[in-house]
Length: 280
Image (cartoon, rainbow, N blue to C red):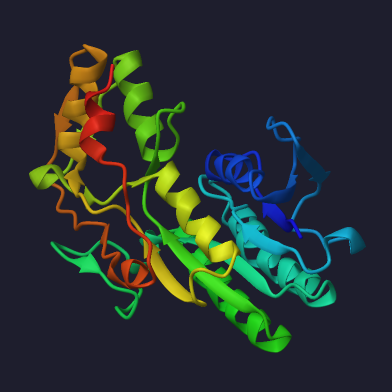
C-alpha cells in the first residue's frame, strides 16, 4: 500500500523539495498559504496558526512539519505560527490517528557557541524570536506526541543549500553580492556553520517518514564547516564579483552541529559543500 504524507509549509524552500521527493514514495498533500508548484501534489490552503479542519482522507498519514515563521520583525507572528501552529497540528494529529511526525526545528536553539559542534544533549540558549519559538514548538510537539502516543522525530536543521535558487543565509549573501551591497564581517570571519544539502535533508526525511530512523531529536547538518567570511569569498569567486566587506570587531560564536546521532541511525550526508561553491 502506498504511503500517505502531509507536508506543511509545502511551498517553502525545504518543504517544496521534500514534497517532490516524497511524491516518489506515495501520495503527498501539501498544506500552505499558496499552492505548491510540484505536479502530483494535492494542496490545502490553510494558516496553521488557526485551528485545523478535519481531513478524514489523511487519517494515519506521516506528517512532515516544515511550516515556520523565520524572518518576520513581529514577535507575535513568530509565536502564532511556530508555537500555536504546532499546538494546532498536534491536536489535528491526535484526531487523525497520526503515528509518525517529523518536526523541523533549527540548530539555532543552541545559540552561538565558540568552536564547538553541538550535540543533542547540550543545553539550549536560543537567541531571538525564531530560535526561541522553535524551542517552544519542540516542547509543544513532545507534549502532544506523548499524549497521542505518536512517534516524533525532531530535526534541528542547519543552513540548507542546493543548486536551486538560494534561501536563507545563502540568499542573503548571493543577493548582496549581486547588488554590490556591503556585508558585515565579524571578528575572525565568524560564525562557522555546518550547512546541509537539500538532497541529504530529503533522504533523512524519507528514512524518518517511513520508519527508518527511530523517534528522537537529531541535528541535521553536514560534515563540513565553513566560516561566514569564507562562504562570502567563495560565492564572490563563483559569481565573478568583488565582495564589499565591512570588517567589525564584534565577537561572535559559531553555529555548528554534530551529526553523530543521525549517523548512528543510518543516515550519511553525501553532497559536499565544496562542489556546490565551485559550480558554474
